[in-house]
Length: 490
Image (cartoon, rainbow, N blue to C red; front, side, top):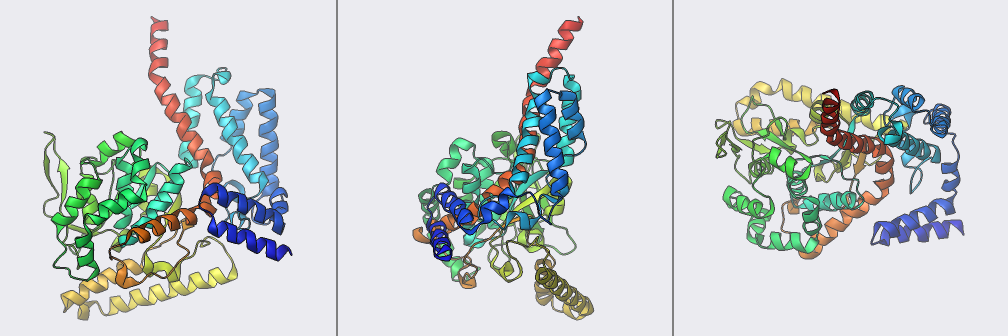
């Protein structure tokens, strides 16, 4: 009986047309299968529940006493998302919805304590001391990023992922993308919130794609001579405002990062953004990141000079599809922004056999699988090194080998991985024109794949989101406070 009810509830989740519908069915499924009781229990071998329980009781006691200095000291002992192992993958995969109540309560308590310290009620602690604490806390805690893989015309899956996160106010302020992921990232990062609702409408995207149906049909027929940079430029001119990376950030507050690979040998790949390349134009960067070798020619970047005019950027260099060398630029995002939590929307068909959405779990099977992949990777690299000179005799084969090695030597997963349920996509249709029905289905597929991850994302990013909000408000108050202090001193 329990099995049949659980099966029906699973069917309800699969058939849900909104997150709320899915959530109701998921909560009911947890209750029916007994997982709800697991969530209420503190005990687990996957994290130090005793330590978290002790911290929670201490914070509650200090808040009840109004002991702001005590709260500040307690939080100074450590704020980070995986404290005591709370981020362990198994803790967030057992239930259909949510995780241990102790973890949720602790995160909520820390967020509430942070809000209290930022309020006027905590004025017994000097503003400068509190501001210094929040800045250090943000640095130690780190932040999250949404990373969107290369996708071809499967990019509409990324649209569904971004749409689901945005609608629930969980879209990270740092986004990266390569190839199709770069297109979606640029759409989200160059349009303010008021424009995103229209952007996310499937019919609007279908209309834009259908205007260029001929281009995509040529691509799906594998005719590289038909693919012209000016055709793609025309598409991007309608979809993406003519902004530099810095201008895009100033418009939306979102940090867009675009991966590009060097077309020439001995050149390294790049990650373009408002910090490293503020004057580079987004459109050309996206064109370069989507320039699949054999279908699109390499692309030269453009930048805005000190006179406000467009000019070539690194004119001797041209660039191609970023997914060939750095599909998910985790190390660069960590270095530039302090990102330590990665949400990955992965729809690159060639990596599906090697990844799953529980990559972080440390079971015997996953350990063996990981060791097998690493061994195979090392043997392939060793073979390529031994054949380096013979391969160099044929430039075409040499380039193909370098591309293959670039793909093989990448990691394609993050802390939270959002993958389509349908893992097989016809590789011959990777660049094919998508009908209205297919676009709508891909967007819906992206949304539905995101829903089971929503609560994990909410819990694991709540502290970093709260710190970002508080610092934004305090930095806004800072000039007024400084001016008031100067007037008082005079």
